[in-house]
Length: 234
Image (cartoon, rainbow, N blue to C red):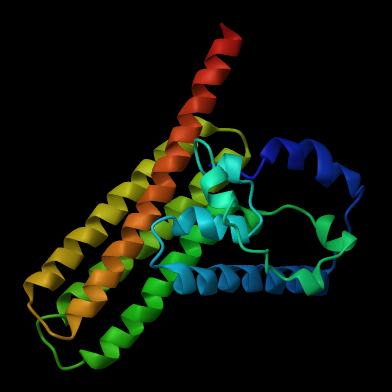
């Protein structure tokens, strides 16, 4: 999985912009654009969530580098790839020259979008289960674990963008621990044997395992880079 080619951004496209001078309005416009990409990913995920290859297929629709996103031969996905629908009407040379920030990192977008979908589902569940004493005690720890997952993902991507793959791996391990805590809370919710919970728990489990898959791929990438750097320094 890619670290969004941090080397090319730090040594190439970023420098091509010269002295970037953006005011607060410019950055707000940029952030709004990245928010649209995030929600676009979530729309694609919800649309294709029943595909077994959904992570790779959605990555192809997002125009992400499949060779970096999916280890191995991506041809099985690319052969059936639908035409990209990601803001084609808004694409321009200026968009291509926008600065790179962490908001554009595929891992950041994918994980944040999936976790956002869980928060939305959790809000709906809370409304339905307001009077269910079996569920309420487990909701806050579950949400807290999701927040920890997101925070550690952000720190991991930041570390990897700076080329510190060991730190990135350590942060991803923390993300996995937080995810395990979320899964434990989910099991506690399952034990509550609530009819309100069952559909929620099944969908949440699928999405949590997708987040886990993204992290495991990222960790594999980091370790490959650490080994490669070790071989070059030998």
